[in-house]
Length: 288
DNA sequence: TTCAATGTTTAGAC
DNA sequence: GGTCTAAACATTGA
Image 1 (spheres, rainbow, N blue to C red):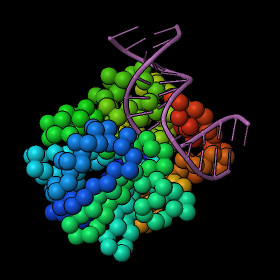
Image 2 (cartoon, rainbow, N blue to C red):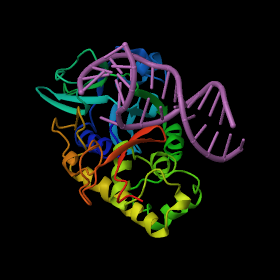
Image 3 (cartoon, rainbow, N blue to C red):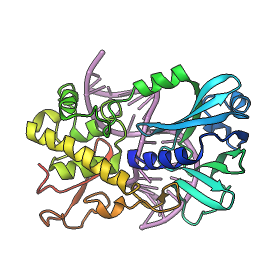
């Protein structure tokens, strides 16, 4: 799926457009996508007003004012989920565009919302891994609380990161980065990028790397994610952000998708291995 | 034809 | 109990 920078980009665009709109009608074409139950979903969501759009880790929280009281619509895009907002004529995309499929609805459209101003929000997902879930405010809070620190928040200090490391000495570096209950929102691309910038071998155990490397890793996580948010995310294969533009972080990447190419730091050929079950590209010369 | 792909959860093994 | 791996979800494209 989109990782933190991509989901954050989508969030910002939705937050700029959705609050205040009333959902006139919701259409569910693939009921299994609504994991809180499609029947109740229709009843609660129809007529609801969008209050605001938030993000925790890679999960979107659409706060709603409904006849039944406040509710939160959770949207997870997983690997190929896509949110497309059509503003009367203009298409606004967020997620992954499937090659050649640029109109909505299409065969990957599973749910769509029609708003009071005629805008329509489509949820598309080629692989059908993504989901929508309607919960109460307290449920949403407990879901949010289960995630680890937000890496771009002020609370993610070097000290806080070192504390996290202390409790995960046996974990491989890459496993720690991908663990959403440690640091929230990092996926495969940014895990590899952060390890490269910190000169850390992603297969090493946390306990094996020096304090200085841990500090570098902390800095690299923030650097890489912030840079990507600034450039509206990474367009890998099919992703585009909510305004229909490709994310521009791709050109700043150092390792992901560069297997067999020379390392930008030392010139050695980048290799690709499997670490904690995920394809991992890194430089065995400068990442120790 | 086989494999890997931006994610998460779960079952099973040690 | 902790920790790790593989599989599962469904589809596409190399």
